[in-house]
Image (tube, rainbow, N blue to C red; front, side):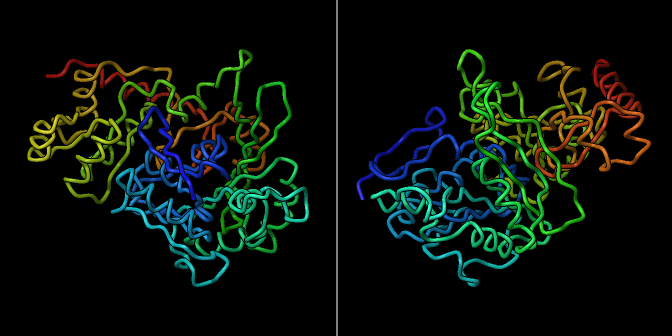
Length: 398
């Protein structure tokens, strides 16, 4: 199979993919942006193709391990080549197998399962003469029901299964879920522009029915000037990232939560080695926060941005961070304290029946985590807490 090497995300990812046949497109970027990975999670991609989804997720997050399974030998070999090309052979694995088999991947073994499944049943439309494109676009090797069943087998009990489908097939997919034992947790419709109907649906599925389904605001691809919207632009590597994003070591868990509350990305490595922390900070550009002086010295030698918060008290640590990296901005939306994921403002009606009745009656603004779907509201206690943290952090450092 003839292949080309495509630099992506301003050259931070290099992807071997077929010259002819199925090549990845913006759908993979949208699914990767929707599928948030918590630090240290295990990720599986069903029908990985060239491995682009895994590369995007590994680039943006801190998974402990990830695996792709691909039925086509040529594509599986290309995915392995892409892991090597991008330095992920020690973290990622590619299996050439049929994920419909119950023993193909470890059961209940993954925190996050992702899949960009075939859009159309094999009986619908004209099949592509190219076999790789036909497998990717039509259910030649697996039906949508089989994709859902495989995803459920692979998910850990509290895991998440993220996938996309054409908006016109959303009702069909939702109708299949009772047969699979999966339940929708998050749905986000995708629109080409603000004045067009949705053409795609992004979904997160769970194994439990106890969590209500939350509809996130639509994802708009392009603005009125036909440019990518800021969210999509950032996912494509063209947006302006936060001036400072942080990676906190295992001793700074409360500091990570405070930073998230203030709206700053703060990854938290609960279990990690010093060499891994330094390598991840160098790879992502995050500022490594640690009290380990030997690790700090190693970062200085290697030119990696790192800082010692200078205290064991979180508020005092914030003062040091503020004096080192600049002021905290007060208008940032809090990130999820558990997931470090962004939160999206949702319609008030979306919270009806999903939050306590008194809370719904007394609040007007609700937000949902892009990863776990938890609904939060802007109560006076949160406002006071944020104000107190900012006020304390802005005091002069002794």
